[in-house]
Length: 323
Image (tube, rainbow, N blue to C red; front, side):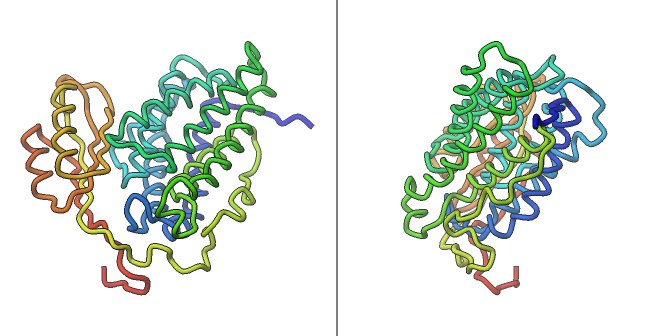
C-alpha cells in the first residue's frame, strides 16, 4: 500500500514537533551516554531544548514556503542553542532551509540538496570537526540521499521521496553504529555517540512527518550503551572548565579573527552565521575554555554580545542533586 505523502509546510512543522517529542522521550538515555567531547551528561537535554525552540518559533508562522518556514525555525534554534549538539542542530536546520526557498513541497532532489548543504555548513562551523560524531551521521545521511536521488533523477514523485528518506535514515543508523569504533573514548566505554543518536531521532522524525507514518521506536534497539536502566556512563565526568555561548553581530573578517583567538585559548569552537545584519552577520558563538574570563574579554573586545551563558562542563556525580 502506498503511503500518502504531504511533505509541505504543515509537515515541516509536524517534523519539528515530532522531533521535540522524540528527544523529550529519549533525553535521559542520550544524557547517559554523553561522553564526547566532554562527559557532562547533557546532550539529550541540549538537543531537546534547542529543537523545542525551533518548533516554538514556527508555531504561529503562516507560510507555505518551506525555506522561509525552516529559516524561522533555524533562527529560533540558533538564538537559543544549547551545547555542542544543540548548536550543531541549529546550524544544520538553518542550512537545510537554504535550498528550499521558493518551494512548497519537499522532493527527493530537494531533500538531497538540503542535506548536502547542511553537511557542508555543519562541518565548516567547527574549528576542529571530528569524525565519529553527529557530523559523521549527517554526512552518511546526506550521501545516502544523494545516491537515492540520483537513482530517481528527475522523479519528483512521492515514491521517490519516500525511498530517499528511508535510505537516509538507514544509512544514518549505520553511521551511528560506526561511531563506537571511530572515537577512542566511545570504544573504551562501549557506547555509540549521543549526538549521533539524537540526530538519527531527528531524521526519523522528518521521515515520519513527511510520509505520514509513526516514529520507529525500534530504530535504536541494540545500540551499545543505550539503555535507560544502565548507570550513567559519564559518571559525573572528568571535564574541567566552562562552556561559553553568546550571540554577536560581526563582519566576516572580525568573526574569523574572533574564531582564531578562541581557538588559541579553548576548544569545541563553533561559530555560525544566524542572519545578515548591517554590521555583517549575527553569529552564534560556542567555546569550551578552562576559565570564562579570557573568552568573554575577547568576545567583548570584538563586539557587543547578547544571550551570554556560562555553564560548568563537569556534570555532578550520579545521585548528586546539589547543583
